[in-house]
Length: 255
Image (tube, rainbow, N blue to C red):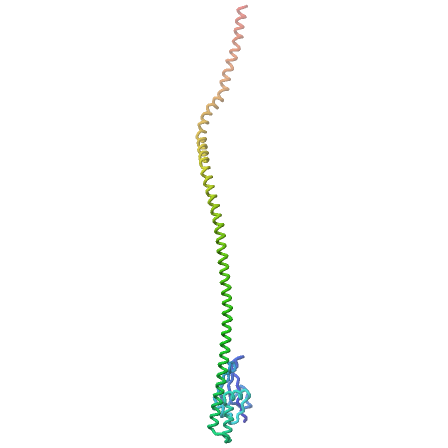
């Protein structure tokens, strides 16, 4: 039965993770497997590889064929290097001690390279973050400077407006004071006149009944005058008739 070391997908959409499994070549990709050797997460930088090195080495030595991706992972973890040295030991080309020393030196060099890559990535990330912060700081400083400048301009404009308004206000206050003084002066001048007019009106009102009383007898006299005239008219006629009677008496004496 051909056996392969391959990846079995799991995880959600666009966030895939994989299990490193030993499975039958005829089994589906995500189907049954013989043994799980570890996990692989390509979403991190560098990718996270968790493997059981001893189990993986045992299956490789038994003849399990890894896929290309899994082979790269095994080489990265030094399993393929260990297999190569172990084959040399089995053939008698080198001793086990020499193979272990070579493997240890290779692992140290590999770890130093991995650590250098991790440090480089971390430094690049820190530099990128620092540059972003500096750019943001420049923008915020420019914005703060602009706001400060606007505030100063607004304050200067307000001070000028207050000064202009103060001068106009003083002029308005002076004008108002002058108008108030003129109004008070006119009120003081007109007050005696109005009082005199009011006194004249009150006196006229008081004298009006007396004049009416004086005029009432005159009106009565005027009304009685025609009666007297009427009485006096017969007297005049009597006087006129008296000479006639005298003439008659004279005529009688003469006769």
